[in-house]
Amino acid sequence: MTMLHTVNKSPFERNALDSCISLAKAGSSILLTEDGVVGAMQGTSHSKKIEEAMANISFYVLGPDLKARGLSESNVVNGVKVVDYSGFVDLAADHESVQSWL
Amino acid sequence: MKFGILVNEGPYTHQASDSAYKFAKAAIDKGHEVFRVFFYHDGVNNGTALAVPPQDDRHIPNQWSELAKQHNVDLVLCVAAAQRRGMLDEDEAKRNGKSANNVAEGFRISGLGQLIEAGIQADRLVVFGD
Image 1 (cartoon, rainbow over the protein chains, first blue to last red):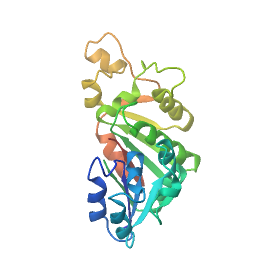
Image 2 (image 1 turned 135 degrees about the vertical axis):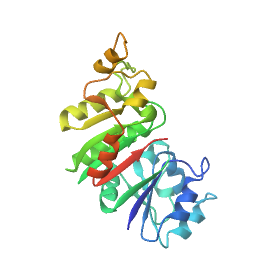
Image 3 (image 1 turned 135 degrees about the horizontal axis):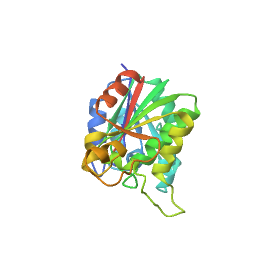
Image 4 (image 1 turned 180 degrees about the horizontal axis):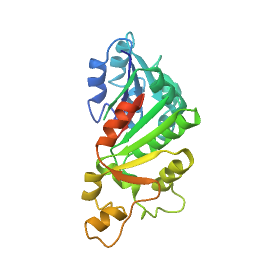
């Protein structure tokens, strides 16, 4: 079953992203939103975890939330796709269920 | 596709109310149906009729009311969460002997069964919270 996971907290604040990555099944997707977008940035102590997990899981980040925080799309980890709210809706529709990691 | 949305956080707190509203709007704009938004915990404060935010700020309760009016979205406040937080519609105010009610247009108060039903009837239930 394909699942869309959403993570809305920075990995520096809570361990939701870590838990999510360790429990997400191969073929599922993780969308980083709100403060969670910090987790998508290159060169942080968490980037490597995403790069490694990318072999089995697709990563997305919500563009408007990056912009609201002054974070540049060009600084996200290579392979993380930037989507807008319309893309968020598509992701929710394209996966069989949505799990929010709050 | 049929979407249900659960909002667990109050307005102007972190971002959940804004994210949920933007998601709902985007889904409707793409031709999907958002048939219910269920407000739970502090989320019930999204339904206040008494919010007066500064004029240059978004009016979150009004945004929801407008969405309900335009697109026939069912906005439901959890009754137990609402009563604890002083959110009363006309019936609840009367039943509890209170002198006023404060539930905004388009919102209604009901029970958790409405959340369960949303989970069953919607193709996807998307949760926003803190």
